[in-house]
Image 1 (tube, rainbow, N blue to C red):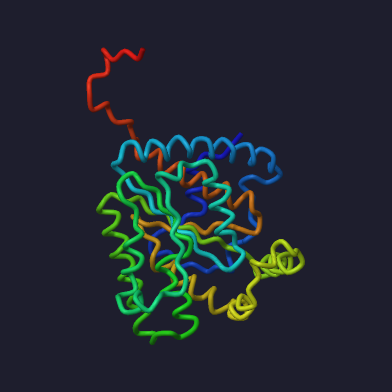
Image 2 (tube, rainbow, N blue to C red; image 1 turned 120 degrees about the vertical axis):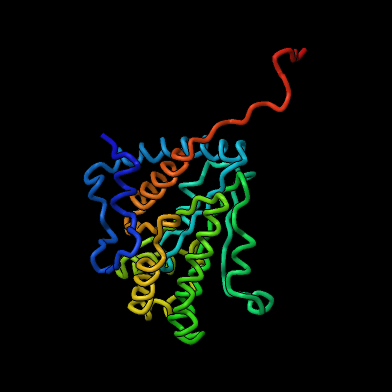
Length: 275
């Protein structure tokens, strides 16, 4: 028996104003599918097919917008989620936005300027691979701006996301929660495999050394910016198939709740004959 989307949604969703302690979340947790890996993989295939249909419907109806935010430490699987969960969607209606170090032009504007330009339009599904949350994560951990500056950004971000939601966007935010031990294994695998060494960045080790600081920063993000209109989900990510299953179920459930319909033809097609 499969668990409905609502079960995973409820279990992994952070309620507004809840204080998050990440030490209480097991990055290797799969208990909702304990001992049922094969069933879970079959269900993921079913969800992938359903997502294809729903994404096409989203695009055709041209009414709703979907923004998906992926955040997590290096090797937590942001790229893997994009490859596996969204494998069959139509690129015509889906975009991936990657946010790296801001350019001089972007630095000359407010920190949300570059992000707003990538927000979804009607009928679009947009995936943020990293996001505006870098401005309360890496900026905080590296002390790039004073604490008084980054602390007020939580309210900015909540207001920004509320505006997007009021304009018709459904927002789903996923923190890919990986353990430090699993990250070590994945970094070592990159180093050992000649075909994956291009992914290895020595700078990642400097970020790894700040693990505790990042966990504290993420705890504040999850505690202060999970809202009714833009909820966070803490997704156990040591086990890749479970990570993908959780995210797929939450997205499919959210799209189904939109109760979308295909638009009616603009013309009367009842007498059209194709010869």
